[in-house]
Image (cartoon, rainbow over all chains, first blue to last red; front, side, top):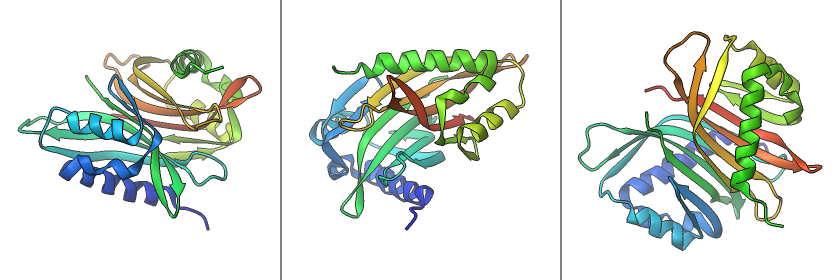
Amino acid sequence: MAVNFQALAEEFTKFYYAQFDSDRSQLGNLYRDHSMLTFETSQLQGAKNIIEKLVSLPFQKVAHRISTLDAQPSSPDMGSVLVMVTGELLVDEEQNPQRYSQVFHLIPEGGSYYVFNDIFRLNYS
Amino acid sequence: MAVNFQALAEEFTKFYYAQFDSDRSQLGNLYRDHSMLTFETSQLQGAKNIIEKLVSLPFQKVAHRISTLDAQPSSPDMGSVLVMVTGELLVDEEQNPQRYSQVFHLIPEGGSYYVFNDIFRLNYS
């Protein structure tokens, strides 16, 4: 059965950002011990370290808005999916959103997917 | 021998954008028949289709400037590399650069690398 990569990427990012924006401490089961996060200039490996980093970010309220979302299979036959998001981030009482770019590399596992690669950058103008 | 993913990504993108900005019709040997390009809302597969698309873009002069460049291994043991670039694009006689985000997924082959995934989006504000 052919996977609809775009639909899968939309479903994943919708779930991910909803969870991030309501309680990001609960994102741990989307990462594994060999998962990697680049968040701005910080590099983390492992679900525990990644969640500690995300929880430590200096804002209480946060809302992600997706501007563009693109997906491709990342291998000819493994079912893995590469997702690139560009969007806007609104934190705490800030009125002006910050633009960001983010890549997720999703690996199939037991009927679901986990995040192997996660790269996040704010886009300063 | 551990691969320095960041150095490899810097070397690749330097080469890629220099070639793109001088003569993008010559980028074909960086793609394969199963390579994919998402360029804005267009989706292409195969080196020939990808190069036709890149050559058809409606500008003569183009210059890429990298703002941020991040790399991670995209698998535990395959030597493949995921690269996310954010940068600025200056085309023809335009004075104002356009911001963009781009992802490359590089696969090792015979001592070098080819592009399996390429996703490009302009960042409109």
